[in-house]
Image (cartoon, rainbow, N blue to C red; front, side):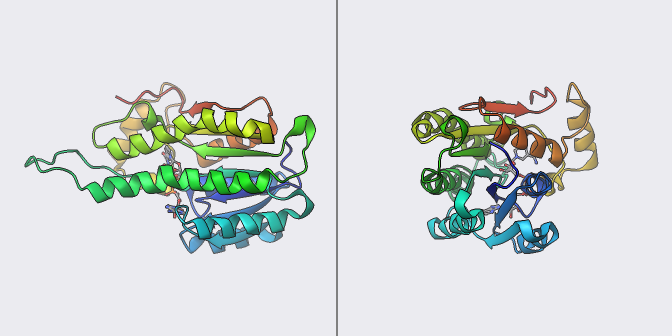
Length: 255
Ligand SMILES: NC(=O)c1ccc[n+]([C@@H]2O[C@H](COP(=O)([O-])OP(=O)(O)OC[C@H]3O[C@@H](n4cnc5c(N)ncnc54)[C@H](O)[C@@H]3O)[C@@H](O)[C@H]2O)c1
């Protein structure tokens, strides 16, 4: 599928990986609907000009995501919604037991899973319903869904029970979703980033950033948001990429 003249829904598009993906797809001639809880999504859409629209919304809400999908279908005209790059997510850290041996807060766990995992399912189900009605392109292709996992799905660290579980769930859905949606000509992929320079990581102290950078075999630095966007663009344009999770991490394996 080409990016040019196609329309994509990008969640988490106010910031970080989603914002960079929106920029790259617009630069490649695509149109984008930027969806995010944050009001900053409106200003980012404005910087992208006529090719972009903003929809404030929560990925866990059926109504909000239906509105974002509808906006993308309208922006896409005859071609409808061609693809989704789902980047909205939250990070969380909590040990099962604190220093005094008290159990962790259950609501915080549920919130992380609700946004990162249930939100991903919500976006997939509503976007695929719209894409299934598209006219088939080359090879019968009607759409592509790119989800965002994390290396924490595989190498979770202490305190990452909720985050790792939510991202492992995203990994786990890739193949069954790709298999199911294949009859509609819709591909499903996930990207599992290592550590990227985004606002999500801005609270990490400088010495921790230096240690994380040193732990990357090559290149010895954090990933840049446009490197994620480049992979998303490649997945859109390469029809053989389906049902797989790609680590994008410079070879890092978390301790
Ligand atoms: N930055 C990294 O190092 C890294 C590594 C691995 C995975 N990831 C994943 O990549 C994705 C993007 O992260 P980022 O680094 O760009 O973070 P970010 O914080 O810069 O951007 C995330 C965006 O998601 C939005 N968001 C959060 N909850 C939402 C909700 N319920 N509904 C709609 N929007 C919501 C936020 O408002 C924000 O704009 C996340 O899923 C994250 O878990 C990031």
